[in-house]
Image (cartoon, rainbow, N blue to C red; front, side, top):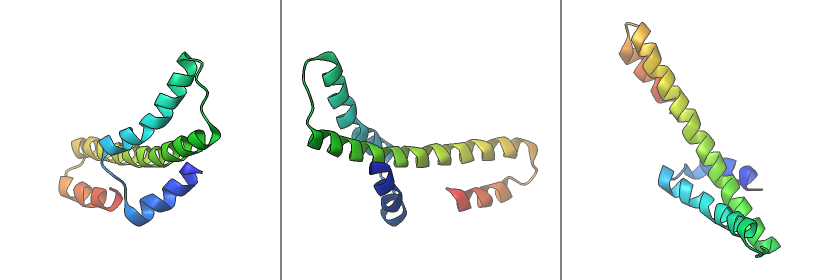
Length: 95
């Protein structure tokens, strides 16, 4: 549900800065970690909430990964191409 919700959220409102995205993943990681290490059992509502939040954060992480790949590819292209400004203009279309 979170992944499906994350796509329109990213399109309509954009995505938050990277540290915020990492904070969005913490509730699921903490809840799952506590369950793994103790006898604590999470509730279905808590699992739903943390799963949706994590799914939305996962979409944002995919966006950051996509941008990073484009930036790295552009820097590599600049090493072999004589027109770095053209690569920079093209890169602005994708990030």
